[in-house]
Length: 303
Ligand SMILES: Nc1ncnc2c1ncn2[C@@H]1O[C@H](COP(=O)(O)OP(=O)(O)O)[C@@H](O)[C@H]1O
Ligand SMILES: O=P(O)(O)OC[C@H]1O[C@](O)(COP(=O)(O)O)[C@@H](O)[C@@H]1O
Image (cartoon, rainbow, N blue to C red; front, top):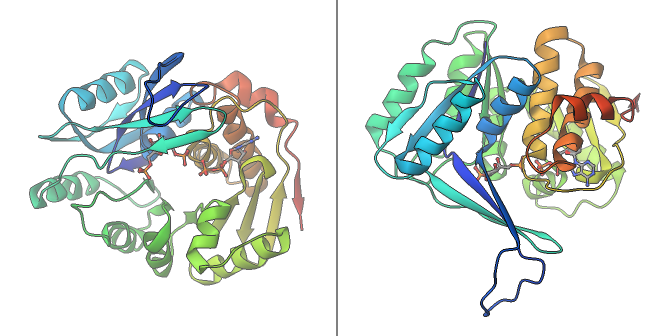
């Protein structure tokens, strides 16, 4: 089974204000809301692909109830820990650019932490565990590291999608996959990365630091997969970007959903990029039709 963990779920409120003016009254032209948070997005896209998963994490209050109901109505299995405070609302402001304002989320207690640990005890060898998104300030920064260390030795494949120090630390615990985007790759090494050669050389370093597989996603420039001594490059489909929120999560879902079914890394990378782009070209996350339509536009080359 695939399990996703979202420590800090959200309602993603997407507001379109084409002529946004700071320090003025602005009125929204169009708005939409979706259940969000990285692990939840992965579970939603897996579900679209017909791959079952269980969504774990913390939800609370009226916002948490919305998230829960939305997932259940899509037929996604959930096993959340309920907390006192409301789950956060993350604002995605669309002007001519995209600006994101993500909330802090509810404060979590030691007891909440133990409750999630207890649910994770259900995992068995052969399962895949996806830890995705930021760690709330009330939890220890070592949360992903601790869980990765514990479950990897139990034969669980652990995927970590996080940036900064969390990513740097977790690599020592040999996760199955990490997926920094090119900005997170720059942050990890504290350098400005400009060229494809730079990305390849720093991607290889991430692999050498402990990850079994590394995907560096590069938005409109596609993605690179690093495994053993091999590097694969995926081209990206052309299209109009409608809403890139969740594109990275969709890429992770496309990769893991395909890998779990076929154990074919090239195919998994091809589906991953088609799925990321299908989300970027859609209002909500990727649909099955859009993924299938874009597949032929993604070519995989060993470099
Ligand atoms: N402008 C774009 N055009 C086409 N595909 C895109 C675009 N932006 C994102 N994608 C797709 O989504 C994937 C992940 O995007 P990226 O922005 O790198 O991730 P993240 O959301 O984690 O920052 C890309 O590899 C690509 O497949
Ligand atoms: O946990 P974080 O880092 O605050 O991120 C949460 C946000 O990330 C998202 O999962 C989108 O992530 P990506 O665009 O990187 O795929 C949103 O749904 C959510 O609002």
